[in-house]
Image (cartoon, rainbow, N blue to C red; front, side, top):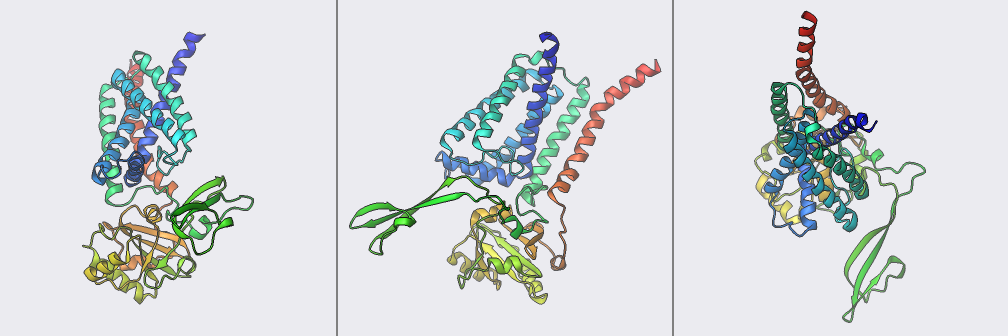
Length: 415
């Protein structure tokens, strides 16, 4: 009985590990900038934040995505069985150790295993990795029992095409924007609705501790026992004390740089179109597009559309940008993490209508003035994007890998 069940167990382990690695690599490749941000979080957590450049971590992000994708494919195809199972086991052992560290120390709230497509807690990540590590150990021990696809030619072509496919997806995501937008600001989402807490749900509770100083003595206070003005503020710490529902979009605010006016509701409830120029980091944003941006601002003015440049920069950087680019559009401050989530490129455009995202463009694909007249989302939903991206690949692989079996059946039928 055990002997008959073993091939089934081996096949389940092979399918589970191979498919999981491919999905993990695929979601990382779709959004290489998001994978870069997650690696930067890891680097900062271990004190290497300033030692590793963004360029190096970008290369690492693409390499990690391609490695997981190709290891998963090789497991499913049965290519280089001994080498593939050894590398898969080593990778899962490393990832399990990382997940154990995350569970104990909690330096990062989300492992980033599947990008923004699927979010797992650190405990869930550890349990997942333990299961996958067990599967990888079984496959490593019985690598010779893995049945490869019968056609070496088909395996070779599938491997080469799959590598080109995943690298092309990552390159597109870096040059423009991710081909599938799993983030909460995707085209078609209504931001005010995404900020609401459903009826019956309770928000998480936080507690802020204030560190104040008086006569050389530092003490901690809360809002309940906050002292008088004779104490001097030093620092504050906020921690979550109770779990609760967190809406997909939260802590979103727009504050005009020149007047400090909060224009969040004004932007989200405007009855017509609103153009948001995202320039997250003014110091590193490309200035070669200033002519196109100024033309977009003029077109928005002619169409009576509000136009704001959102940035996490400083007033000094805004003044320098205006001086260099002759920008006349107003600036508003927004949190840097929010801008990273809203738009992956450092500079780009988001078009809103009554708080609904109609379209997004990167600095390498800026919109034309006529694009600002849209009244409905002009870009596919994440589900449509995913289907358009993955279905052609799956059909091509299915046809390629099925051909040897079709030919074999035809020969048997002929004979």
